[in-house]
Image (cartoon, one colour):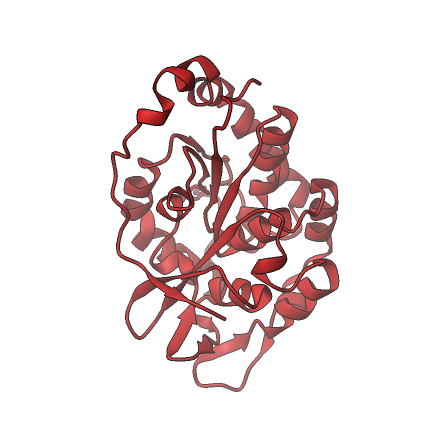
Length: 284
């Protein structure tokens, strides 16, 4: 696929717990189409995938890492009154597989979004400790103990920013491709534990916000994952395939958004139709 000269492409990866593994399939198709990625932003599981890709890990290796993940490797019971469990184990798991530890070492610029529970604001993390930033963005309230950082008490970024389109746009992206994990669930999917009920509750609260945010992206890819629960870490292959199918279904839109002839005519005169929401920046 031809891409406009000097065109900066940004990719925004939303949250979705295990369902977010579908982002790997989306990135795989972008690579196959020869679409470069100049900037990344991620939330919750999207921050894990974005960080691995920004670190320069081959997609094949990222897919293999996904197959090795389990909830016992990502979290453990906690005696804290702030959460049933802690996701500190996630840092250890990622440290075993990621070649970098800080944002400054990444090959592609990255922003990770977490939520400060004190202010109720989205916090953009793009400096310092990468693994702690990922853990903060994945700290589902009540389930996981929030991550304390300076004056912040950080929890899952999904609470305030379920699709970080404006964040990647602020990084200078001319075209933003967003991978949004669907909020729908199959009627056959049972909500029979605290984790599934919590995740479903967050999805309901975030549904309108995601619709509004996705409209700011140039291309929105929506993997069909409604048949999978948020804890389906054993469905890696199926979720990746769902991401691939969704991305291939957007081939025409991708070609239009990245069309060299269109960008050579008016790309440098393009004005953003949307203003970014106020955000607070944090440093780890």
